[in-house]
Amino acid sequence: MQPVNWYSTNNKSEVVNFETALLNGMASNSGLYMVERNDIPKLLPEQIRDMKGMPYSEIAFQVLNPFLGAEIPEKKLHALLDDAYREDIIPTRVQRIVDKMYVMWLTQGPTYSFKDYAMRFFGRALNHFLGERGLQRCVITATSGDTGGAGAAALHRLENVTNVIFYPKGEVSSGQRRQMTTLGDNIYAFEVNGDFDVCQALAKYLLANKEFAARLFGDPQHFTSANSISVGRLAPQAVYPFYAHSRIADGLEKMIVSVPSGNFGDMMGTTFAREMGLPIEKILVGLNPNKPFLDFIETGKYNVAASIKTPSSAMKVSHPSNLARLIDLYGGHMFDEKDPKTNKVIREGVIDRMPDLDAMREDFFVHSITNEEHYDTMLNVYEKYIDELTGKRVILDPHGAVGWRTLEASLKGDTSRLAVSYETADPGKFPVDVRKAIGITPDLPPGMKKQAGLEERIYSVGAEPDHKRDESGEDKLVLSDAQIREAEDKIRGIFS
Image (cartoon, rainbow, N blue to C red; front, side):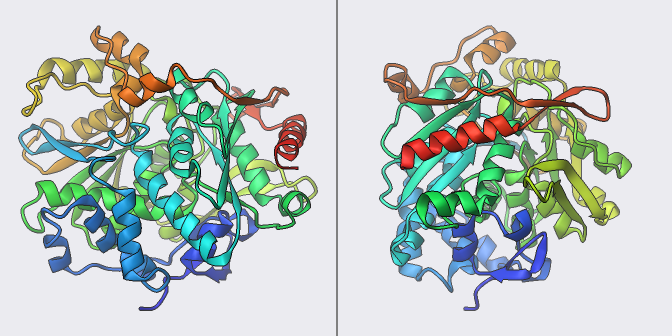
């Protein structure tokens, strides 16, 4: 089996295998690792049909082995995936809501978020490769909510990994925060004065700052990423739609997939699945009021705006990192322009080669919902639909509401077409918003109840971010030099 080549979206002459891409995190010239469209492995129709009834871990093997078979022996990959996707730790359910419309609940893992799936694979794959090389890595994570907790749980106490997490002060729930701050050991959570975009800019800065890593650890590659820019997160997200299809489709029946989208990791994973041969009729990209991508699809112009507060807080992202991969897949090029002296981003989302917009418009349905529509959708689903297994009313979380509302907008009342929407977090993680919508406070998941009584360890980046006006005149928070210095000083204090 030949290895799959990964290249930098900003430097196509850099070609590496999966292991190198995983360990590096970010590609050269601050690009993202990507695979040429024609090099994405294809599954045979009979392989897809045979997935019916397979456990999640075996479907994951069928999807990921074509990417990894040249680098991880089959027996080892089977063991890694069997451990990552143990049914007693991370069960998956696809629930029929009405006629041929389904919800896939990716919500029952250790942190009750869909991000457990990719993170559990990422952590085990990273630890495996590091162990083979006798290396250590520090994983840098920026989170708007669920990524940090899922990453912390997946990386906790792995012998070859430490984890530094940046989360925006006051913009994650207390439950989400405690999933990052109560583990201790090799998990270091930083509360940042700013929004998610500031946290993401700080993470990207550190990942690109090879000199700082070399001075502190003696290894310029010591920092790597667990955000959705990592190939270790991207590849396993291609498994979700294969699993859904195996549970709801008749043979090679086509299905529609609705993806609540923030940093576009799930969307790109689903796009990879389609490229691998999964019969997907259309991919629906569900957005909250942060919708520069919708504006781009409609107008051909991409303008990064100030992020807007929204009930789907983990999707409060104005400039999705994985969008650069989608643009690349369709023949374009997007990059963040940096100051060559300071290495700070001075202009985000620059497109110097346009993708095939007509093809993108054909393949994707993009829809944005308002904050009020989050609540309307949760209430409508709760009042209208009963879970056939439990007899209880269906409760969505705010992110799942984005996916479901987008599916409804696409189908326009036609419930006869096979369709699935991703539900990405347990409603109990968002008790205030769910109660506002349906008048009932959902139960807190059991693991989070336990963490509520544990001591927290929090590091702080309290320096003020910079401010600048976006093209619409709105005030946008921007990573400041003072924040960079403070973060570096505190990381130095931890690891020196």
